[in-house]
Image 1 (spheres, rainbow, N blue to C red):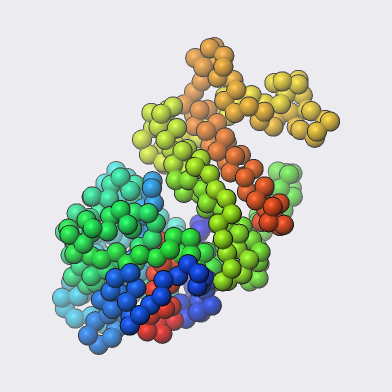
Image 2: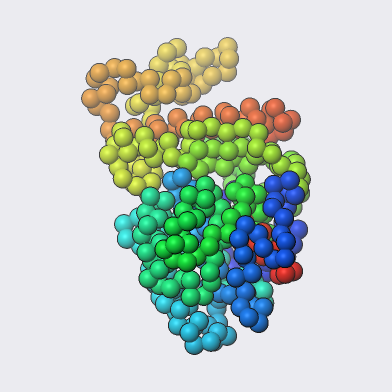
Length: 367
């Protein structure tokens, strides 16, 4: 599943009424309350307050979804002023400080929520910089329009108290994996081309990127790569479970790259990896057998030992930062791919949005 180049779509959230809902992992709503007081998201007329925010506060990155209404004239003067202040800062910039980034290419226009048209923006920043975001929320008077933010991820619990004390914002918490699945289905409904596969994957010369029909995808696996990795087996809209995972994930990649190359950000680590050659760091099958290992169908270019070349002092001295970053990336992706394949065989097959959707779906018939 790829979220790049998301275009405009006239569909509304009403189209997503059939989104994933797992009663086994959902908390019940009683009189409009769910993990706090979601009723605070509504004004005195029963209209949903704007803007809407959804946050996935991970161990490494925080992902923020911001729904911005198109027509500010629908709001009273005080609300309009706050909306314009938030708009000027968030949408007037694509970078916030040294580490905050708005992914403009992911923007989803012409999205309808509760009868209002607007855009969905995607912003991310290191969770280690959460204090700066909280200062921003306080300075821009986020609580002037709503007293809560839909949130998921471990940080929704870790930062709950400081949000309430510092900004007077309640984090309304939703299950992380359920939100992940809802987000996947929402993106696919609004831009089907975002789910794709590669034909002839073993032949790079003939391989082609093709759209995947996600209307009836079951069963399928979700390999969610965050700081660590969780692998979900999804059998239907209401039947899914976590079947495996690993502690070696995106956080491991960034941590090792920082250690080995002295880079400071994820973007820098990826940039280094894109220019590197992992074969200068890894030991390949051909380095051991002199070529292919035909008996077991192993090509000579297959990695036999990750970082195996680093046992040589001369190789260590000549190792480049770019090569080390590339080898780190290859090591982790190979490991994750192997685990995912084993899970697929075991299951018998190969194969900061969700929390906001869940809230809208389960409250007051909004969708």
